[in-house]
Length: 88
Image 1 (tube, rainbow, N blue to C red):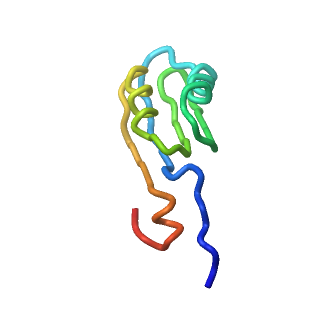
Image 2 (spheres, rainbow, N blue to C red):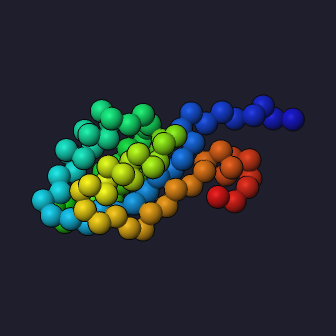
């Protein structure tokens, strides 16, 4: 039997932010400073940013991103369930 894998940050959080005067560097810095997680990608331009982040509190990331513009294509996947071979 294989040892159980521990996942430090459970939720793979992905979304798009559509807005005006978006700054991927500022968004990246804010997320790193205010939310615990890893594997952050914040890429795009002044009107559209793609976020990818592993965290245990995806709702906080979503709340912040909503302050920047419209958020959509939101995906929050439970990587612990995936590691156990389950959906979601």
